[in-house]
Image (cartoon, rainbow, N blue to C red; front, side):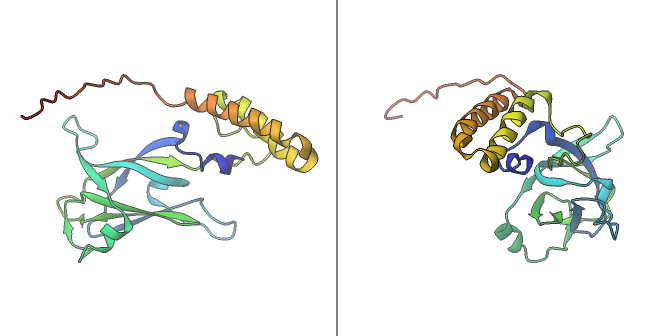
Length: 202
């Protein structure tokens, strides 16, 4: 059920931010899903695991000083990144491409940092993967607003196996609870809509 929630859009309690230490001449940075498969350990930049996707990024200089400044970076798709003739060319990184694999997420920056930009960071907001509950004694990886949704969702999935005649009703309750929880998720902000003045013939 939690995996299915991950396919329903952005969940704001799973958004976090990171300052990625850039390395001169390095284009790709791999973030693995977990620290290992039980037989081997894997390392990931800044010790961060479980990244699902990157929302937005900035090139940050002077991170720990009052003169800190950010420059926006543009997220590009596969075709755009593939069109770059020299993906290892050095300069000031201003674009990035995200690849999502089974066991890790790869972030490629372009151009790669040169000697003047290697001391800078790629500051970005990312979506974390919703963690499985695991043992019954563990706390679920969700805010209290989604507890009614979780209960009705579990009832719906259990009805598939144990009471198929109740599936339709359970699904309606589940979807209703989920939509109510989504409406309360996130952070509200003011929106201003201004009509554009249009004068025919001008």
